[in-house]
Length: 407
Length: 116
Image 1 (tube, chains in turn red, cyan):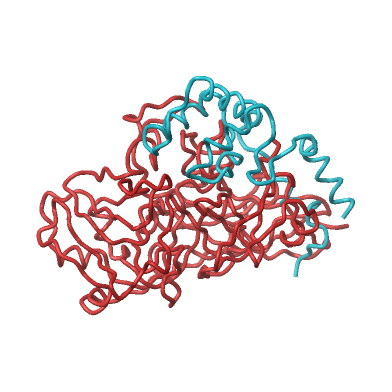
Image 2 (image 1 turned 45 degrees about the horizontal axis):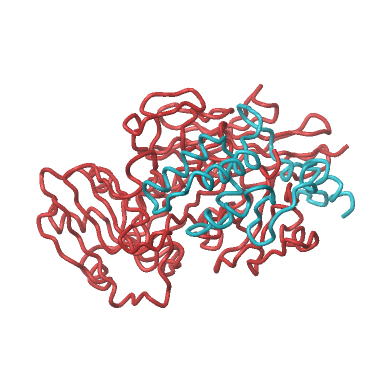
């Protein structure tokens, strides 16, 4: 177990001293990293507050559950997932930025400046959740390879841009079109300029949904650099890696896209269920599409203590890939009984849904609150781990927090 | 503070035993410098120290990086040294279907945190 649960917090100044116990506890806001010796110096992540750094080259950072309580995720609380090295802000001239639409199945290939995108197409503002396909990876056994996300690689900001479908239709989608893929200006970790770190996409039907956007703004502000400035795709409900950042090319493909991180085991799970630890050949791995139903408890914070006799107001968010969440439950007795929570409608399709409930505790002691969402097709979250897969995707096990009720 | 420190030591009894390299966070043991040199060229060593895997899986990761991510080839001795180190110092935790809530999120780790 050593190091397994260690948390490395980014302070407001984005800096921890690995040698100082006091600095670690202070920066952690009173929380206790379980393995101090593994708490390393964290490099600064500009514009982020309270995130846990998983990797500093490239930067990958997640948000503790209690910091995801906002209905609309602020930029400073949105997780960061990078497959490559982001472009530098100094190297980007948004006035000169061009988005090229091309590919075998594009009838009228052409390029747009940011200004042309903004003036040629209707603008849409939607709240859309994005979640890393590997969110929850850290819980799989045998351990799955990659960044060891716990629960915080998810968020639901409000995005502004144009419909991907409007742009694609303007450029002509040939009858043989199969997939829509992005390319961006991030660089490969090895520094090899001939390699792209990632280029993924979605089938044409998903690209043409009215919630699939090409966006330049998040929460009413230009996209932060780490989230794709000046232009990104957002195809909500699927692994967030389909929502490419720093995009300068969109391809209408006549085949399933075969860019980096589309093939092999990346963002794929076994086509047929396998036993934990099984070897799976690449040709038996299938591309992840819509993500499964999931929820988070965002209030209270795990570890809270309260006097007996007080009801506890609990709340959080629930989402379900392409689907809607239909019911929400919590349990304070390890799943023996489940209490129905009230559940709000999404502000628009593919936004997460707010839920809340008040629970009473029968006696002082230690309790866990478990949260379980159910989607419109009656799919529910498992209380233990769902199907193991080599890269540790799609862990939608119910979120649990711990509570002490004092005598 | 003393109580908290004691708790950490109880929860992670091995922490005090493993010396770590200050810069990379790698456990200092036979072969650690091979990993420092060969496994930090492109990515942070954190992706190594946060990972747990058996020897075969570590080798699979190396082969994948060699095949797709521009990792160079190792001579036999180097590869064995890297694998020996990783398999010994970063092995899988004991088998389980789901671990308990992490110690850092329990009430005992959050003294002073109360409901509003």
